[in-house]
Structure formats: structure tokens, C-alpha cells
Image: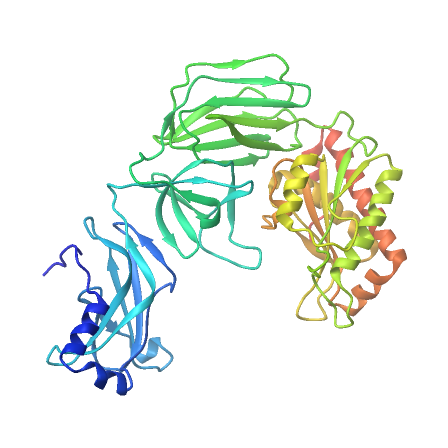
Length: 512
């Protein structure tokens, strides 16, 4: 018999009151419960919509008949699947249209052979079934809103899809723990942290818009692509190489663009065009005129999407360039510590100061994210750098590993367009005699996240390795590191102004 839509789920409090009335509750309280634990999987609050699966697990007395959610059966797993442990039950229910559940815990029952209730339990976490006919909307809030691809986590956080402006309208289709699920388009979704999204009252429409006719223009510093919309829709961007092209997908947008006006002052943006990838995904294709991209930002002015493309510096030499130097960690954020007590925050600041001196002597303007042993949140560093608008960023760190034998230098970048900067510094750092630990891409670190300027993180050496630590503590070696970083920046700038940038990358030595 098919399961009927859930309208009035089993309520554990009512069940316990019934037991009290018939005199069974004191007996159950005195006896050890046949149910040790019962919970949703994952064991966090969830919002589910039709088609989603509610998964549950119960641990208790083996060989029993167990159900959840007003009668859904659970299966006891074979000992081979539980490392020999008996009494582990699991169940799955696929939410159907019309099911209702309003932020309540899930109820479980263990039944005797005569169908009398042997034990009952409820989950610690609550579940809500969402209606397709009542869209839940939200708007983004704050200065560092981002979307994640999924629910994965490590010490760097979830894998980020990209950043969004504030007040972008999102269609929320689920919740798992601290992240809302966002519908971007048909068969495309993302996740957004709850603390950067504000739920809207019911009654709104799913965000969608026709595009207007758009324009491209330039001023003394940037080129601008402006696309008028009817709402602030979510978007995703990617900077492609060979040829260098900025691609921006706007979700929920459908083309009503009948012309694209190209005004005076354009220097970096080429012949823009668009594609309607699917009915609710509008793609902007923005060719760039230089092989090396120097950054871009995306945001809204009212409901007009504005893509701001940065041009190369007037002179691709250290003299006149603005370089931001980030001395990693600081203050209460100690960073890595060696067995001998050497602290990352001290080493990075010492190297950063020497690099600043090197660059200033070469004529560069230098911006420091910290100049003393103070605590500076990484988010605050990113926001400050957004205001200062450097041409380049070098974030300095020292590495650490569980084994003292691991050693070497490495560089890290997130976007392929900024790989040439990371590779140039990596090759120069190898000239110090340090072993190569690698040039690492798609690095999900906060200071590698901005698209506004090329950026690189340098893990100078391993403080957990005695040989590397001895070098890192040596002021002369710190000076050598600073000189190699300066040389790496010079090489990057030289290659950027040479017509054969991509040839230089092809001929670069293999990364260790």
C-alpha cells in the first residue's frame, strides 16, 4: 500500500502523555531503553523538498521492528556492514508533493511482535518539508557573500563557487545544518551560509528577469560591461585562458538584448557577446586584449549588473607598481609552531618587512596588511585590500607537516589566470636551494579568493622540518627569500609585457 502524504506526523509528546495515562511511563523510565540513539543523517537541522531523501539511523536492541515518521519501516543492517555490531537500523523516505512537516523532530518507534510500542524516541534535530508552491526566498547580506559547490568542509572551509554582491535574491530549496541550498537554474544548485543570507517573508516569486540591451564603456582606469536586469540575480564567473576570456553566467536571466552599445574609452575588453545556454542561464562572453588578466569585479548598481575589468598597469615594471604584502597570521593567530617554539606569525612578519624594503628600493609602492604582531581577521584583510586596490598581492606563510621529514617551498593560486604569478615566484624560490614542494592551484584560501588583482600565497619552507626551520630563523636567509620573491615579481612583469607569455609558460620547467 503506498504511503499517504504526511499531514499529521506522529507527535512524541502526545505519545508519552498516553503512556503516562495508562501507567506505562514509570515502567519505561525505570528500565533501560531499548533505543540507545536515534537521529537524522546528517544529524543537523534540515529543510527538504519533494524529491529529497530524509535519511535516519537508530541504534538499539537487535531483531526488532522499527519505524520512523509515522510508520516508515527501518531495516536492521547486517553485521558485515557495521563491523560486527548488531542493532543498527537505517531508513530512507523520499519526500512527496503534499507532505507537510514544520520544523519538528523525527519520531521513532520500536514495536513488539504484537505491534504494541516497546520504545519511542525523537531526533535532537528538526526537519521541515518545503512546499513547491510556496517558494522560500532570501537576499544576501554583508560584504563577503559567497556560494559553495557543496557541503564538504576542511580547514579551509567548503569549496567555493564564487562571491556575490549584497541584496542578491536567492531561491532557497533546502537547508542542511548551517547552509541553505540555492536553486540557480534547472539542474544547477549551490549552497550559501545562513549567516550571509536573510530570509524573506512568504509570497514572493522565484527570481527571474529579462535582460535589457547593454553597454560597454571605459574610463581612465577600467572597462565596464553593464547589463540591466529586473532583479539582482545570482551569478558565477570564470576567467578562461588561451584566449583570455571572462565568462559570466547570470542565473534566472533570459535574453531580451537587442543591441550592445560600445562607447568610447574601451581598452581591455574586446568584442563582447552572449549565449542563452538554457532558458534560465544567460552567459556573457567578454574577450580580453591582453594575455595576462589583471583582475575584475562584479556587482550591482541598482538592478544593473556591472562587470569592472582592470587594465594592465601603465608600466609593467616594479617602479610604479602597487604591491600588497600579507604577513600571514599575527597576534592571537600564531599559525604553525615548530617543536622548538618558532612561530609562523613572527617568521612571516620578518620576511614581509624585508620584502617591503626590497620592493621599495626598486620603486614599488608597498601596502602591508599588518606591520606589527597584531591580530587581523582574514576577512578584514580582504576588505581592506579591496579598498586599497593593489596591482598584485603576495601572502607570506611558513608550512608545517606531521612528519619532520617533509620539507621544501611551494606557491599557491586559486584561479588559472593567476598561475603565471605563482609559477614565477615558485621558480625563483627554488633558487634558494630549498626543495620544491609544488605549485598548487585551485587553492581555497581566503586571500586567494579575490578576483580583483593577481595574487599568490608563498609557503616559504616547513617550520616543522629542522633543516628548513634553521634556515627560516636565519636573517640572512630571510633576506635571500625576500630577494627571490622580488625577482619572481620582476619575472612575472617581464613575461606579462612580452608577447610570448604563453610560450614562456609552456617552456617553464616541470613543477615538482
